[in-house]
Each structure stands twice: as C-alpha cells, then as structure tokens.
Image: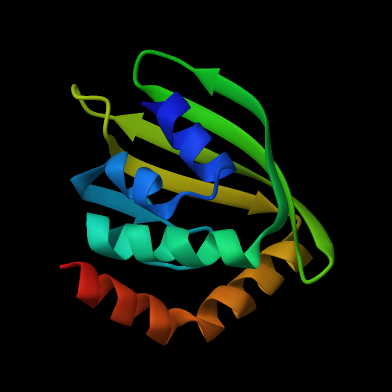
Length: 130
C-alpha cells in the first residue's frame, strides 16, 4: 500500500491518500507534541500539507517487514527541507501509524507556522469527514 500512498501523494490526490489510511490511523506530526488519532484528522492534515509544501518530491524509499520510510524534499516559504514519512501498515496494507520528521529546524519552524495558521480549517475539514 505504500506504493499506492506514494502515487497518491505524487498525484496530489487527497481522496486516494485517504483511501490508504486505516480508520484508527495515528498521525505523528514533526511540529506538534501530541499525536492526532483517526482517518478524518489525518486526511485533513494531508490535504493541507500538500498545499504548504512546494516542489514536493519523494527521493528514496526504504522498507522492512513492518513498514516503509519515504524520504522527501520540498520547500516551505522558500526554505528547502528534507523529511521522511514513516509508515506502519496493518495486515490489509492500510497505514496505521504515520510519523513525519523534517529538517532543518528553520524549515520545520516555517512548516509549523504555515500549518498552525491552517489549524482551524484542518479541524473543520476533519469534522466534515466524520
């Protein structure tokens, strides 16, 4: 399923991204202290972050028996960043745990500011999906 998720992200297809998520997925943000639980909020976050990231591209994929790591590059507010999506899949191939890490700090801070400014819209979008 990670190849389906990767293809969905690269196509900027939010519905296809959501289809790769388990109902009880847990999203671990690089800029928030608490994880977000559930498909609705995770889908809303993904719908917004693909608008915040510019020039997004996956550059490497690693996998083992329990999951996948998709390394990406993008820009936020003109700052280049490198990140990784760590995906844990269930027996059906759906994403149950989704952790994102990004660097450098200045780009992570720009990402936090951009996503923070959208937080109310993200919550509203998530409530529409439930």
